[in-house]
Image 1 (cartoon, rainbow, N blue to C red):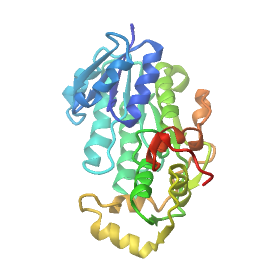
Image 2 (cartoon, helix red, strand yellow):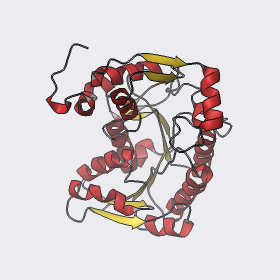
Image 3 (tube, helix red, strand yellow):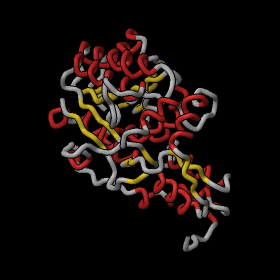
Amino acid sequence: MERLVTMFGGGGFLGRYVAQSLFRTGVRVRVAQVDPGKAYFLKPLAAVGQVQFAKVDIRDAERVREAVRGSSAVINLAGILKGDFAGIHVDGARNIAAAAADEGVEALVHVSAIGADPDSASAYGRSKGKGEQAVRAAFAQATILRPSVLFGREDNFINRFAAMARLAPILPVIRGGAKFQPVFAADVGRAAAAAALDPRSHGGKVYELGGPQVMTMRELMQLACRETERARPLVEIPDPVAKLLARFGGFLPGAPLTWDQWLMLQHDNVVAPGSHGLEAFGISATPIAAVADGWLITYRRHGRFAVKSPY
């Protein structure tokens, strides 16, 4: 346990998989986030003394520096889908990269997203792009990971479709032809850990991480129905109607689609041709069908006691 890796946002969906990969290597892990209590579930996964926690808002440069101090590597997993995009994705990312550089950290892994572009029409994509620029300016040898949509037991994507299929007699489909390349969170977790522990091989590079299949929004919803054994008709919402809903109702609490998400759906979320991906880490991408049954079974009518039908 001579090496210490600090993870910002390590208690989130992806963070738990990065942490597990790090724990297996024997390094110590410091989890830094606004509410460290939400990451305490990681304790039983680590050896005694292998994990510690710090209360940090990444918009506070001094607190970030304190959390980074003494680290061999830093991983920035902090991200939001609504709210202070500039503060978290740009200013926070800059604070982390600057602290890592000033403290002489060996490796910095910055988790961005496919679609990151400083000129993006969406605030999310634009802030992710500017965040990458800020990281590169402060820490030139940072490794940047751009995953597509993540899937896994705790995700808020496939699980949302499964929950809808359990409750609704029909499922509305918005932008059914939009393409994604869903990637297993555990695969991305392994890649992030590998990049942090081997900066000589991965430092200064950009990786776009996607799964083995490109799937449309409609196909992903069909998969959720199939795995949960809920034969629901899918009804396509015309783009003009969906656009109006996002524009004038997306700001409401519980809205299914914000205006910024609508803008992001105008572009396919897939790996760019020729990009370095999971294979550069020696990882074979996991298909959704290989693991989805392990947790979507809980959405079936009789849960884990159900006998899978031919549907």
